[in-house]
Image: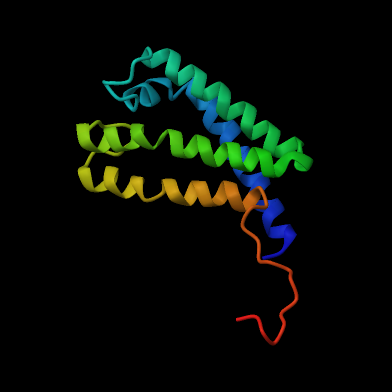
Length: 139
């Protein structure tokens, strides 16, 4: 893939993160609260607000700090991993949110999380082919 594709992935993911973060703090706050697992030890609303702020900060950073794209891509990937328990809990607890009102839909969503991790790593420049020259002995 070209650096143009990585740049496009970075900019798109940055914009998506800013948008999602804003939704955490505004019109979709209740939907996001429904995704906080019952066992999570922090208040639901505080969790949603904090995660929204983190999403906005990481999204803006991905957009405006291309020189830090590797760091920010890694932080975004880690963020996507950290929220996986919430997605699993939504499936296991049968919580309806964001139109995911069947077990099949909630299960399908779980498979999208690794895509987000890979997207962040790709946009951050972590997933590249080695540019080392091939030698006849290399296999």
